[in-house]
Length: 153
Image 1 (cartoon, one colour):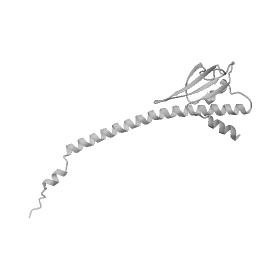
Image 2 (cartoon, helix red, strand yellow):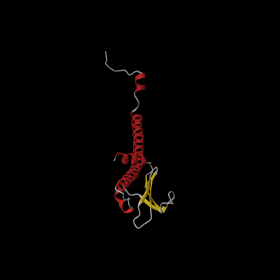
Image 3 (cartoon, helix red, strand yellow):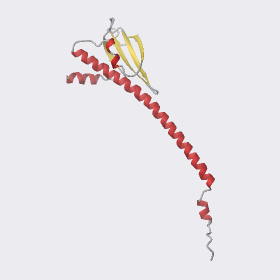
Image 4 (cartoon, helix red, strand yellow):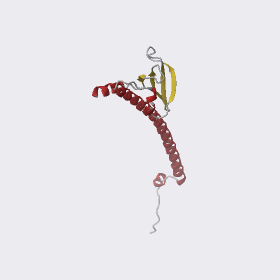
């Protein structure tokens, strides 16, 4: 007897030709590369937005806590005192006070631009050469934080 293997027709159908498998692998690789690239780009853009939001929150919290500390010793937080509390590099605009205009001369708006959204805080200042900071309003209301901090001391 001879030992020649005989392939049945069913066995040949299950075995794809080498060219088709090679093209399929290139297609899968291209799709995976596109998906990973898109995911990486979206992640980087989300990080830009996250940092803008974080900088705005840290600045707002720092200014409000500094204002509370100054009030404890019966002093005002002055515009010349706030530079160390500004985190990041926001765009600064000076405008007339839209709220509290009966008490404040103008408002400085600090804006951090993310990719998806912009975050800003408004600092209302009084009248003088080195005006005091009267109100601080931001993207998040941290007044509860200020109240908790002042009630703990």
